[in-house]
Amino acid sequence: MKKNYDLKIFALLLMMILGISNALFAQISLPFQSDFSGVGGSSQSSSASMPAITAATMPEGFLFTGSEKIYEGGQKLKFGTASLTGTLPTDVINTNGASTIEVKFNAIAWPQGSTARPALIELHYGEQVTEILIDGRVGWPLENSELIEFTCQFTAISTPTSLFFKTTANTSTNESRIFLDNVRIIDAGSSSQVSNPTFTPAGGVYNTPQNVTINCATEGATIHYTTDGSTPTTSSAIFSAPIVVSTTTTIKALAVKNGMDPSSVTSATYTFPQTINTLAALRALAPPYNNGSNPGTDIYIYTGQAVITQKKISTATNKAVTIYIQDETAAIMIYDQAKNLQEDLVIGDKISNVTGTLTNYYGMIEIIPAEPCTLINVGQQIETTVITAAQLDGNYNNPIQAKVVTLKDVMYVQTGAFEKDKYYDLKENNIVYDSVVYIESLFDTDYIGDAIPAIVVKIDGVVNFKGSKDIQTSNRIVPLDKSNHIIKPEQGINDINKSVIKLTPNPANSFVNIITGSPMKLEIYSLIGKLITTEYLYEGSNIISVSGYPAGLYLIKLKDTNTGQTFVQKLVVK
Image (cartoon, rainbow, N blue to C red):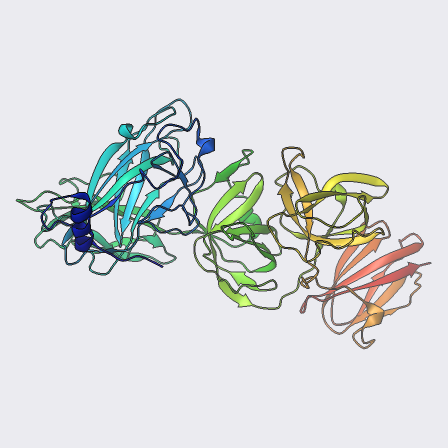
């Protein structure tokens, strides 16, 4: 349950308990000195000994959501990681009629490496955003006395509202990790400082151009702004009319008035994603493989239509949702830790307008969604891509990655029962392929505990790029749940109404007449799987020459171009 702090009541309690004599001056003080049991100021030898904050250890005055990326830092709080940004919300603040609040905190950036680099932190309060560059410091241990005090002000919001601390992405010039302590939120009363500018609409991800208005609550204030990322000064452009933005733009604003201190610089970023209409094209834009997590910052919107082939909810604390989608060109994994997609999406749903960034996570290309997608249809089925075990190689650019695939005529080498977080070998054509099957550890799967088949089998699954410290990273098949019925079955021609498709003569000498009830795509294969010919058939009678074919057995595959239904039949050529 959120705690609603009344600043003035809180101040009175502080005066009574701590002996503070500040007149009627409200303040929320949120130090971390005593919140982490057993964690000393400099007793830790490295960042590896910093446990993640849990709901039980979250310091008083802050909200725990499970995705903060915060850690116990020895009488202070470590915020963000070397590759991931952090977000830390306070409990909602009741300003109790105050016109301005002042935020003070102690912080320092902690670089990874031997060079001290600063970290950029954003403070979000309603639509107000203030950026502060935190000085860097190299080495460990880090004493609390080394943290530097920073101050900023916000126009008070009458509705109880949380204050968010956010680290920004790790770049060539800025770090993403800081240590934070002694957060103080003060009722600044009637400030001599001009109120911070606010933006309407607020920054965010948009698909259409936006007319941005900048406002200031201080009557008579002049607002200066920039749109090129630079810090505004009194020489910058004066806001007088809505700013039209149609490409990704950061607007920064400064408000000034004679006889008053200038406002803090506030900013809002308006992001317009790049439109991509195939998953193959989207995958090509992913960051390169760096043997680790390589998150991108560009935002894309996939406007094609893809079917959800697999959906899993992690059993870990964050309950992240993993979804696999596939269109006619490729497949990709969606990793939705922030739960930005709709919760009711299920296997078989066809979706579009998937918006987010791309991450190359140890070779697995992922979409990190930023907002809900569009549901196009439900109950869809797909055809799998038939592969061989040899195609499960170490190439992270392999086009089968994240696809639903089928391995035919294979045998498991191991015996016993299926277990989580296990690799299994397969035998195909008397060749053993090591560890090409993987059973994920973070998902519940409905075949765990089932006996491993001791016969030749067909395996339907999705392709993951997976490895461990003992097993080389490679493409591997993760079998689908038994309850996943998305695979479109292949029907024999003899299994359907003879008035729909007729194939005569069979056996054939020089030609075969295929009569269909709708347009079809024809593929003829040899028994070893070699594609001999591809043709498109009209509704009605179609004469196909087989006069040049060596005598033998062939496989005819017909796909209805209207419904997508597939039919398979053997053809004998004499």
